[in-house]
Image (cartoon, rainbow, N blue to C red; front, top):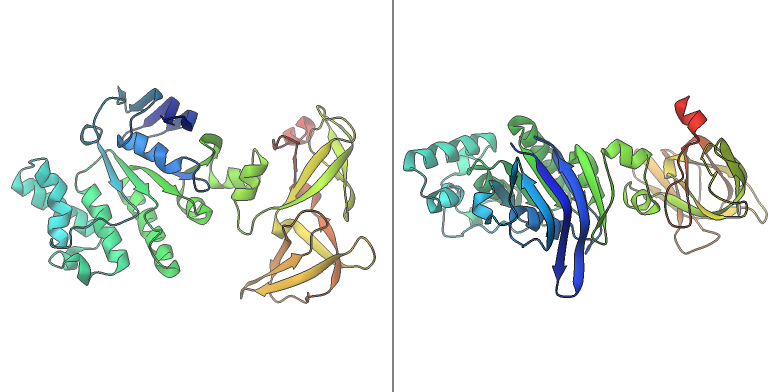
Length: 368
């Protein structure tokens, strides 16, 4: 195992600045997930750690050593890619042993490591098969085993489940989580799927346009997003956003108004905002209550999705083009075409300033 420290890491391709002053501490044995939309820099950051891309600026440490100039084979990392990249003419055993043989590892050591890895990944019965005789999940385990057999200090995963179907992704998520528990290795995992991030990570790093938006546990990011971007990216279905206006506020709480909802008393600290300031009100689908209503302030239900144990109710927004979503347990009496009033739970409302920054809880209430 090893820790990883990124200090003001930058990456520039020509005139394009991809990674911008990234600072991050990854502890021994942590499972850290880099998540963000396509093009945010998460795979590039992983390749910088692996040594597959050169660092344009900053310092990268693995353990106590600065590794900026070290080639990949000397960094003690193993990498699992989106494509399995298995050699079709080799058996499972030969694929898993290939990296060790290239490193001129003793024959008995190669055998012992491959067999030990095969036991962990439950591949012992498949060692004589070739990749074409394996399922997608089995191939992915072989690709993981090839990296693990080298006994790296750090395991890196670059969207390893993207090529699998939905049910197999769930199975492989569980296998990777169990693997981390057994090995206790430092693991860094890249995905654009926030469900993978929430279910696997000890710590999530949310990236946006080459910068870190927020770092924290899945619970912290879901309950206390630092920016509107994080609030909208983490959680499925996504958080609802409504335009709001500050009526009055201070460090002890505030009152805001939003079209169709009316005035709300909230516990956020708005001491640095002036009355009339444009804000964004955010509320998770499970914290949005509905009631039958009519008139100008009513919202119309445009779709109802039944998912077995829960129901998603979609509402026509008053501003913007993104539907609002209410989530509740099944069964539900709501029907398409009904007019309803919205009532967010004030204790679970998030407020965001014009620059997207979350407004924190008032100090007196946070302390209580």
